[in-house]
Length: 154
Image 1 (tube, rainbow, N blue to C red):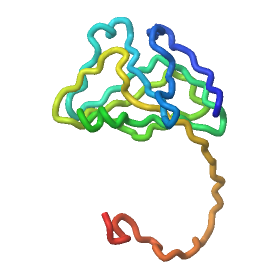
Image 2 (image 1 turned 90 degrees about the horizontal axis):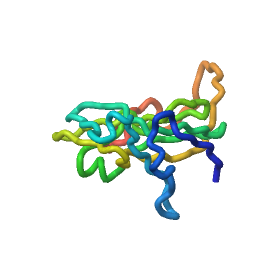
Image 3 (image 1 turned 90 degrees about the vertical axis):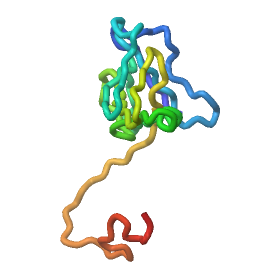
Image 4 (image 1 turned 180 degrees about the horizontal axis):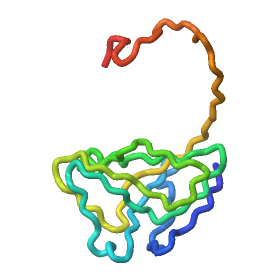
């Protein structure tokens, strides 16, 4: 378990609970849409094939050596075609801005997002940084340079 300092962005609706794990086996925490005061009553409509950056109203301090992965919520994806444009999105440990979620409507109907709606989930993962060394050759493998579909399955 990691300790994660978190605080509300200026103007955020602080009446919502902070992210929590819904069950003992949950891998991620739900993130909520946290609109500006002007949009709280009306919400936002996401038209088909459109994308929007939705604020969560949160600032995070992710420990060095970790990332936060922002992932779609399966229910929104299945029922409405709502997913993330860059899934999973990565939040680096040195980012201190407001956490936003790029929602994309891949469905056929407009989708209305209300203030406080659970829009994505956040999972924390350790990261390993690589050091690159230029080489004239790479080791051989059975696969070699075989790319998409090279194993005979798609």
